[in-house]
Length: 260
Image (cartoon, rainbow, N blue to C red):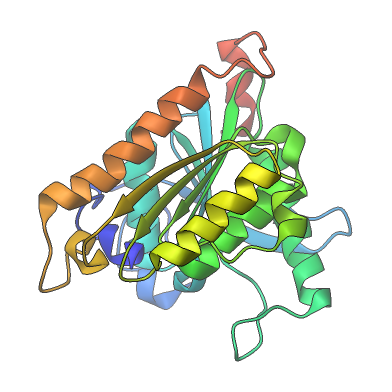
C-alpha cells in the first residue's frame, strides 16, 4: 500500500545527474541516490540503494516488502533522503510462494540486514528500521532484532502485529506502529499491545479507523490530509529517536564523508 505513497505523498523531484542501473524499467529515470554493493560476513553480495546526506543524525533502513527496489521505492527513498535522513533501502530476498521464508533463506536475510545496518551506522547517528505492509513490517522487526544494540527505532506501517515473541523479546528499540482498522482488526492490535507490555517493550500506536486506501495517492479514496498525517507521525518519531540518549556519542561531522 505504501509503495503507492512513494509516488504521491513522498514523490521526489530528483536530480538529473543520477546513475543508470541494470534494471531496465529504471534506466529511463534519474535518481538522486546511488546503487551500491554490500556483502555479508560470509561474502554473499547484494545490492542496496543509498541516498540522503552523509552527515545525517538519523539513518533509515527502508524495507518495502514485496515491492522491492522498484521506481516507487526509489522515489520514496530519495524524498526521505531530501528531508535530511541517510537512507538505505533493500528488497526482501528469497520467499516461498505462500510468502513464508524457509529457515535457510531467513538466515541469509538476517545476514543481509545486519550488513546493511552496519553500513548505515556512523558515529553519533541513530538508526531506525522502517517497514510497510505485512512483509516489510515483519522484516523491520527482524532487522531490529538481528542487531538490537545498534537500532534505536522500529517503525511498522500497516503490518507487523503478527510477529513472533522470539523476535519481539530481542528488541531494544522504541517501536512505532501505524495501523488501519481495515487491515488490522482491533483484537489483533490489542493482542500485539499486550505482548509488548509483557516483554516490557516501548510501543507507540497510531490506529486509524479509515480505509488505508485513503493514504494511497493512486486509489479512488485518497485523502492528502490523511497521507500527511501518516508521514507526520513517522517524522515525530524520528525526532524523538534523534534526541534519544540511550547511547550518546559525539557528533564529528567530518567522519560522515567516508561513505560518499
